[in-house]
Image (cartoon, rainbow, N blue to C red):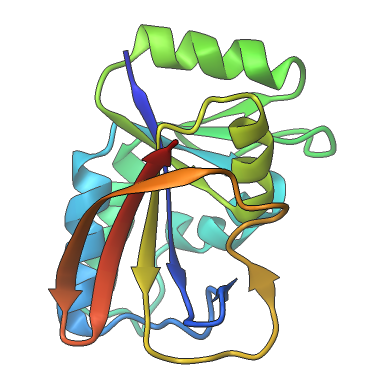
Length: 176
């Protein structure tokens, strides 16, 4: 049975921002390996739109970007959206009965399925489907933005903390 893991970069004041957390080369390497080891990813429509960037090679990419794109493209993606009509390569659209669809995915797969996006994580958490929350804590304050938790913070228990690179630490929590 697959484990659902919601993992994102977060500022000290609790915000996520895909643009403000450009990873250093060692952190980028960590994320490449994280995606390589994952079974696949579940995206909300907005986060999937951001991640579609990796579907097509860009002329200014370096080695890390090309490798990340290759690994990302190779993994199955499930996209939760009522408004999208279609999704890109290696992606499946989930339009109805999210809870049942995700429970089927968990039963059909092993390993870790990454959950991308605070809003989607909240809905899946409300269903009791998030098995682990991983916060990549960065020592900056953004002051505003999208909160890591899109609603009230669920009761959590810290199970691990691990320095990843220089000043970024991964905090791993499970539902309490």
